[in-house]
Image (cartoon, rainbow over all chains, first blue to last red; front, side, top):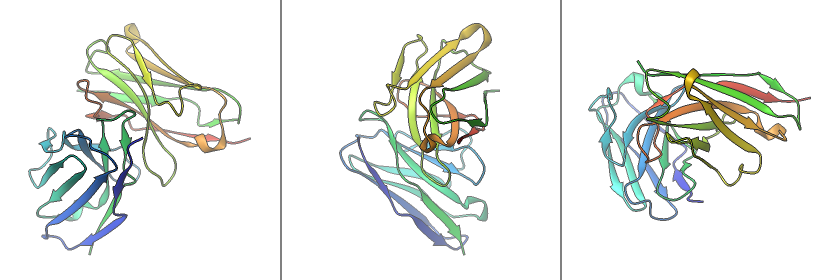
Length: 106
Length: 118
């Protein structure tokens, strides 16, 4: 199975720019998707197919990458962005998720 | 609007079979695909399987021998059955909609917490 590696946690100040990385153990083309999950809630789709903004998601969120290296960028970060962010690949079966990056605001 | 809602028992004994229902509204099960995804407490997400709009299914090979997904389109319901439960199957179980065939999920249910314990 394709393993997705994410940094466990990040801490940033409101108004700053933050990049969350996801590295795949093999190429996933551009079939990388990003979700936001707040405590006690279901995941919410932010970015699909590497760089496409999901409906209703603020333009502060953006995604980039292809192959094995992907990035989710939030610029500027707001207090409400405190959450865990998961990447998911759907190029190689079965589709798999990263362990998540917990974003905390200073 | 699009909604998915999971239902089922909160507690199941080891070796028993888990049965969950996902009731959807705002879209047709014949036009969209629905997956089941689970999340053990404090851990990451695991895709379990999918039922396609045409009714065919695909499963995570790690669970395939124990898992079955079916549906009743007249009731807008998708069903998950997983046998031979173990304590490590304790998790929140989500159903989620795939808007195409690219295995990403644009709408999720609120999830149902299932504890496997004697």
